[in-house]
Image (tube, rainbow, N blue to C red; front, side, top):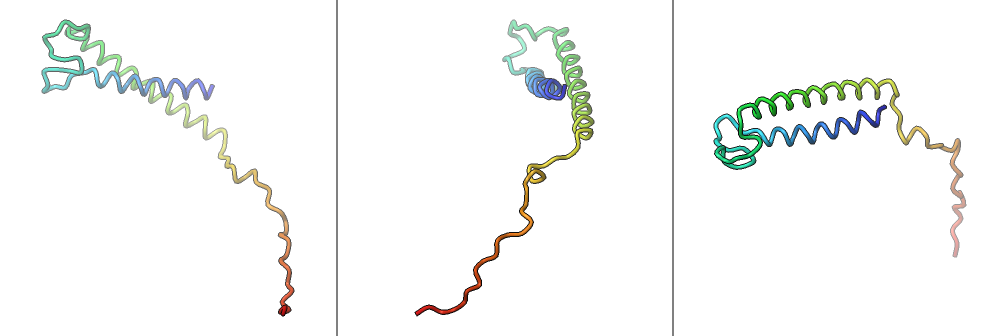
Length: 102
């Protein structure tokens, strides 16, 4: 379930970026598809409403999956790679021979 939610989160994020880039700004006459006079699918007034509603829906999906992933990870508990490393009880001692050799 965690993997499905994570993939959904990534897809929704990419879709949200694309939807935001497709919208034209308030002051600009052109969006990402060129001038507003062109015959494109996104030129009509209903398309603007549709894209705005779809953007809000995708943002809601991102919020819900973020909350779900946060709760799911906190239930799993924290684990680290360092936790699985076995540390020996005592390290071998270095030789203590300090007699000089000629």
